[in-house]
Length: 76
Image 1 (tube, rainbow, N blue to C red):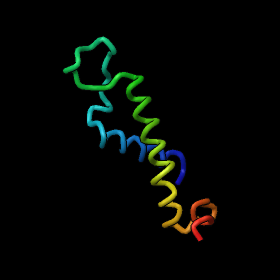
Image 2 (cartoon, one colour):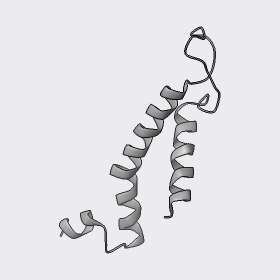
Image 3 (tube, one colour):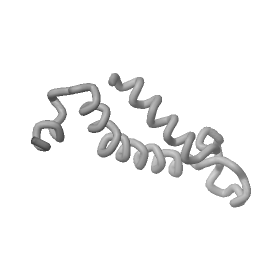
Image 4 (cartoon, rainbow, N blue to C red):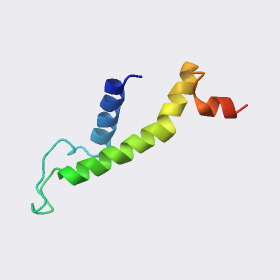
């Protein structure tokens, strides 16, 4: 999986988790305003990237038969 595909998948994960992920919200906006601040978006992207890299990507590598995947070498 190339970096652009990975970034797209992580973006989609963010949008699935928070449907207002793409909406800009200012830090001083009232709580009922939809959207996320820049820092909230960065935190969500980091969380989704960690989930992808630690849980999903190894499964994709194993499914595709990637021999460079560490987990496939240690699971025997």
